[in-house]
Length: 322
Image 1 (cartoon, rainbow, N blue to C red):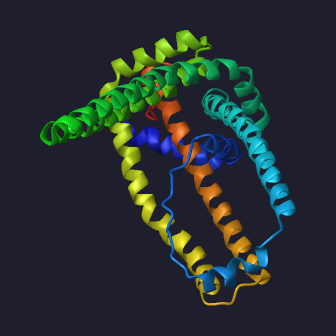
Image 2: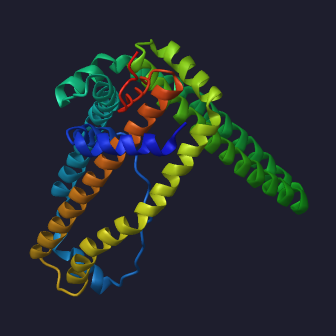
Image 3: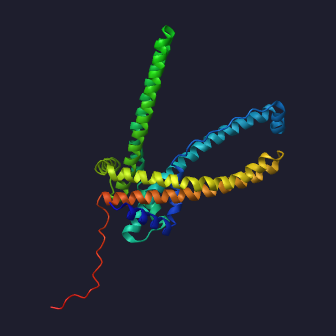
């Protein structure tokens, strides 16, 4: 497998067919983000009154705010479901878009979107199958940890040494279990990637596509690991400029907010900075998601024997006369 040619072709498709960036952005919405670490600050009563005194509301208004928060939370759940549906369709659309470029040398947002929408339930079924083993492992792990910690507590009540050994064993088993879950989730993620392409490119049902994805993975473990390593390296390379860009956008606004008196005007730099960060993050996510999806689609086409053979250029030398 020519890894360089596949990556080069994936980038060519990503850069030339920028309409796919929209699908890349929509697909990245359902990918799930990493959790951030919050910082806690200790403030005195004067600082608390200084910052939050103007927001001290009566009980009636507070109850209204609580009801509004609950309503917003319910709305957020519905919006989250809608975003997930859109992201699934967009994933299928990205696969179809790359296929259209390779087969027809043309694609459009509408064509790719409709192709993804037609296969939504198939893609949903694939995600469901990929999630079942992980959910079962999580449920089993919770039960095992509860039993082990309960047993450790009982042992600790009878003997400090036995209790300490039980707690240590619980932590060790929990660490092994977490490592196992990470490995299983990586395998299931890769099966899902191949299965989605089997569904779109080979028009298979969700069960057949899942089996096909597993078979393709088994037959091509080494190239799959190589591409995972390549994407990991690309992520490390991109991390530094992304962090620098975020810092360049965020630090001026943080400096303004931290050195100024609180007031309504502070909402302006916060909103502007947040908007710039969202625009920058969305653009990066769209490009990365498009390039990553295009690469895996090209990889699957070659692994599954769907890629057209590269025509041999005719010789420029004149044919010898008979």
